[in-house]
Length: 202
Image (cartoon, rainbow, N blue to C red):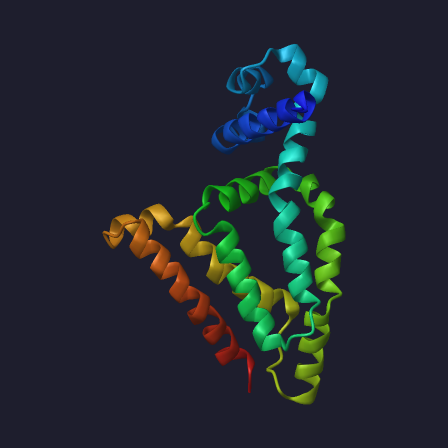
């Protein structure tokens, strides 16, 4: 038997995601979302009382898989060098062909900083992780150069995110299609860890 309630909620979330990705939180209207989902506005409000509540549900859904996987990498028993490669793989696999998602998230977090509070618990598990512990121990032993965790993570993520955000520009400038672009991303999975470790290991 089909669960009508679950099916309707899923339909609403998919419709809202399409509208939010185009118009953002401030530009989206509940009536637009209801129309996109093919339901009336009253039914939309029955499932989600406000636009903010609906946006939060989508925001959390986007990160529902990514963050647990990332936290698992940060706290696994692999050496730091391999953790860095795994982080890069995870980010590119998750967002490689969905550049609109990180662009959307960055824009909304910038405009609505309170959204970060919903991620604070997950971020804390990364800040106090085996990754950070191993980094500090490596710095103290002289294996790694002196670098702050924030600088290191910013370097890793920025090297991952820019080519994804710049996908349309890169395709246009270098006259490549999806196949060549995907090959480019696969190459970066190897290139980024190499660049990071070259500047991290003494």
